[in-house]
Image 1 (cartoon, rainbow, N blue to C red):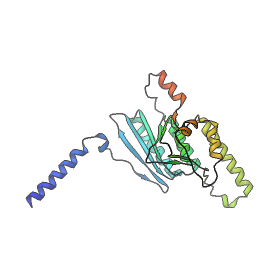
Image 2 (cartoon, rainbow, N blue to C red):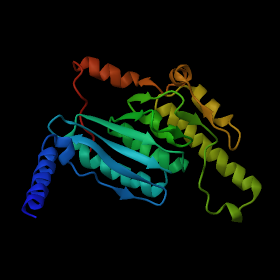
Image 3 (cartoon, one colour):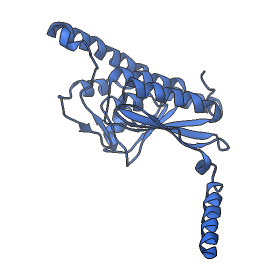
Image 4 (tube, rainbow, N blue to C red):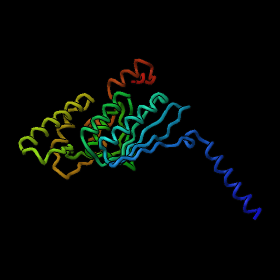
Length: 230
C-alpha cells in the first residue's frame, strides 16, 4: 500500500510538471456551446502575443455572437489573431455578422486539413486579412437564408427577399476585396451541390492570399502588426 500511495503521488507530480511546461497547456479553453456549433479560444499565448479562436459546426446567430465575444476578449492580448474554421455552413446573415468582426479586428482566417468550410462559412473565410485554407476543404454551395416567416409569404415576396439578401452578400464580398467571380460561382450552385475548390481555384477566387490593403499597411509599417480595433 505505501508503494501504491507513492506511485499515485509521483504521477500527480508528473502531471503538474507537464502543465507548467508550456503557457499553452496552462490556458483553459473557453467552450461556449451553441445549438448549431461551438467556439473555443485556441492556443492563446500571451507571452508570444499570438492566439486564435476555433469555430466548429453550424454557424447561426448564437454562435456568431459567441465567436465575436471571444475574438474581442483576446484581441488586446495578441498581435496576431487567427480564426480557425471548421463548419458545414449556416445562416448567411450570421456569417456576415461574424465576418464583419473578423475584418474589423484585422484577423487571419484558416482552414486546415482536418477541417472544412462550406456554404456560408466561406463568407467568414473571405473576411480574413490573410487567408490560408487547405485545398479541397473549402466548398461553394447555395447559400442558406433563415426566413422564419417564409411559410407566411408568397413565392414572389420570397423571391424578392432572397434577391435582396443575395445583393447583401454581393456587396459584402466586394467590401472584403473578393473578385466578382466568387459571388458568381456561389450564385450558380444548385441546391444540395457542393463545389470543392482546389489550390488553383482558391487563389483565383480570392479565398487564399493576403488582402492588398493589409499587405500595404504592413509594408508601410515595417511589417509590424496593425493597431487593434475597439
